[in-house]
Length: 443
Length: 95
Image (cartoon, chains in turn purple, blue):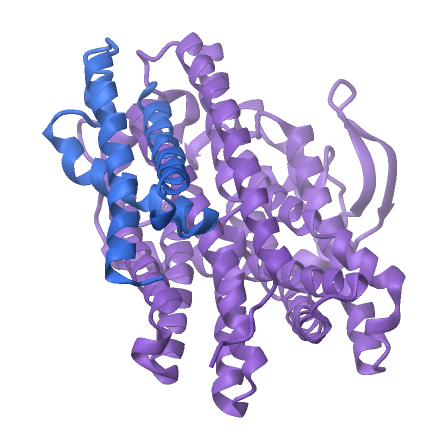
């Protein structure tokens, strides 16, 4: 049984990690494409239009990869998590179906119109199709997060005699206090990824002395969007999320912050340290006293419950992974504010395009927003353990009881091989698009 | 269980098939990106629409026995979906 849960979780973790590489870029990029197109409509400078179309190509490749990797996810609900789907399908089925019907179709239909329909529709309608792609993309994120928010903090449900969950209040799904802060935090994090991608392509063009005019435009836009989103992802959205975890999942909060023992007055914030699960303490700790209490409750002496106050079965089952994921996410978020803040400063001083170390830095930092986004999701998912639906349905009760661990392992190996192939194809396609660069419109 | 893997293999067959088709018949080559996107969406569309006739991934593995015949039909339909979408795009002169 333990083996079955382990492999089911491993397979889901692997497939969702690979899948989320793509939507996190498309969500942020769609907003930046709308910005480029809006700038073109306002000042009629062709390079903004070419920038919008260039990034829509990268968007299309990412969107396609997101679709390919999303289909197996849909199947996994039925194959690996049959019991979970059976028990909660009446609730999560609503939001997942809305995601497909309202958002995915909106996004994919208008993406095709944006790519192929510029001459046919004229510029204003072309802008509108770009805006609808953005709306579909963010709507998709909203409905998926509504599903996840219900799993993190279940509301508006009723349990029938046979154990299945049904919706008792539909609007509660969307008024869930977990949803809005998570959605805003997630979207800002996506915007950071896209801003770094746009800025890094700009830095690449400037360093290569190729498409320099576009290089400057991409870098400038990426830095402005990146700095704004880096600040917003920390405050207010990140702060709001952390307060929600402290309120609704106090055991997870203690684990992610690395609080093993409850302090009588005021909790310290841990900057660095390694969880020692044998002695139940943090090794080599560097911490600042009372800051965590202040950040969470705006009271210096407010007590925050440590892991010692919870039963073992209430605590997440992989505390070190949760702790490290959280600290990597926060650490990277701080670096993003620093690097984007510095870039924004030099942009203001009109020196950014000539500072080569900073341009190299921006270019090579591209993988890190992806890592931060993924570790952020690991925090949410590891923090919810040992539950699938927090406080109601244990992970061990949601798996498909008849699927053997060997079967799951075999499929997982298949996924690893095929995703490596897809990953290579993705790199070739995106590399080719970047190499070609934005093409000026032929008249 | 392996249904998930079959769905992925089906799309990859669509991608590879559409690109090979583009290489064999240059007239239907709309670039690596174009053929790949057509391969993905064409194969998904065809499998989602026609797979219900009995060769969707779940039916291929049902009941816990791998049905190679249905699998081959699935792959052919997937490939056809991608190829026909490229042909449609070229005929309509979209690209």
